[in-house]
Each structure stands twice: as structure tokens, then as C-alpha cells.
Amino acid sequence: MKIILLGAPGAGKGTQAVKIAAKYGVAHISTGDLLRKNIKDCTELGKKAKEFMDGGRLVPDGLVVALVKDAVSAVENVLFDGFPRTIEQARAVDGFAAVDKVINLRIDESLLMNRLTGRRVCNDCAAVTHVSLLNGAGKCQVCGGVLQQRADDNEVTVKSRLDIYCKQTAPLIEYYEKQGKLIDIDAGRESDEVFKDIERVLDK
Ligand code: AP5
Image (cartoon, rainbow, N blue to C red):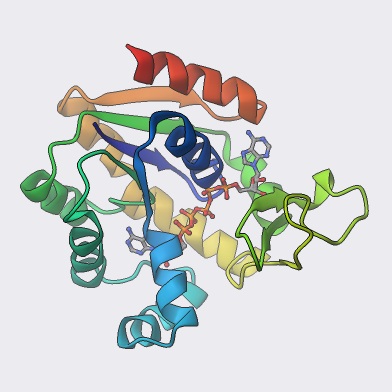
């Protein structure tokens, strides 16, 4: 099974990907996470990617496609989170992976700024949460680790990411509609409700 999770920044791709990977045993490939790991490890790719990510711009297609090809070379069942993000990347996927379903997490843009600027990520276990769920506690509710705000989750960078999503990634909706693979899911609801719809799609 090969699945793509499409959606604007903050639509809940990462949140749903964790649930899908746990239930269906697919490898979760998040290009955002892979790139952030390269930045943390100070690799050559990380150094190149950092300026694009800090500015809320997309990392060049060639770098990202090579990264994903390498990550999926040994896995059969995979869930792409945040990839592809351009028509060029989607064409590259057509060449190396037979995608079964593309789940589009559709959401009203007005909900995204709050979700993203309020997101906190655990330094230790990488669990993702939102300040509104912390009840004043500053620690990770999974492992007690220190929570951090992502460098690109500030208002200015979020605006740029949303703008780039509209221009460069939203056209993929039509691309996959034409391939008959697109399934739209309303991601503006509570996370468990969204997941129930995803389960219905994947259990078919
Ligand atoms: P990436 O890390 O992929 O970021 P993104 O696409 O901007 O998506 P996010 O991780 O911000 O959001 P999400 O949809 O996963 O939401 P989440 O579940 O965390 O990419 C970062 C950067 O890397 C890019 O800008 C680019 O520079 C580069 N990059 C990555 N991939 C690339 C590619 N393919 N090509 C080129 N460059 C690439 O949820 C967000 C918040 O909302 C959390 O606080 C969560 O708790 C909350 N939340 C989630 N679901 C719900 C819900 N149902 N109700 C209420 N709150 C919810």
C-alpha cells in the first residue's frame, strides 16, 4: 500500500500520519521531519535546506526527491506526509512508486494560523501537541520532555508557507483527481473524527 497525505500546513498531516502508521503498519515518510533531522545533524543537505525552510519556502525538488527515493528504497508499504509538494515532485513519484490513494485533508484556511503558531513539539519523543491542550503545563504529556516551538511556526513564516501551498502544492489536487486517486476528507473537525473517515477510506 502506498498512500499520499496532501493538505495545507497545519491541516493535520503529521497528526493523522502517526495514527495511520500505528494502525496500518506503513512506514511514515515525512519530508519535513527528514529535512529537520538533516538540519539537526548539520549535514550538507541540512545546511542547504535550512535557509529555504526558515523562509517558509520549498526546498528544491531535486534535493527532496533524492532524499525520499533513498528513504523508500527498502519499504513496500509507505505513507508520504508532506511529499509530493510540486507537480515536478509528483511526476517523480510516478516514476518510482505506484501510489494507491491520495488523501486530501481539506480545511478552511482561517483555522491554520492558530493551529501552527500554537503547535509545540517534544524535544525528546517528537510528540506534537497544541498549547490549548496543555492546561498551563509546559512539559510533554507523553514523556515529560521539554516542548519547543518549530522555527517556522511564527506568523510571518506561516503566511509565506500558506501562500506557497496555494501556488505550488494545491495544483496537486487536480493532478491526482485526474488520476482517479484523490479522496477528500474534512480536516476541520476533531482529530478522532478525521481519523474515522481515514479508516473508512483505507479499510475499503
Ligand atoms: P512540513 O514539516 O511538512 O510542514 P507543513 O507541510 O507545513 O505541515 P505541518 O507539519 O506544519 O502541518 P501538519 O499538516 O503536519 O499539521 P500537524 O499535524 O502538525 O514542512 C516544513 C518545511 O519543510 C516546508 O515549509 C518546506 O520548506 C520543507 N519541505 C517539507 N517537505 C517538502 C517537500 N516535499 N518539498 C520541498 N520542501 C519541503 O498539526 C498542526 C497543529 O494542529 C498541531 O498543534 C496539532 O496538535 C493541531 N491539530 C492537528 N489536527 C488537529 C485537529 N483535527 N483539530 C485541532 N487541532 C489539530
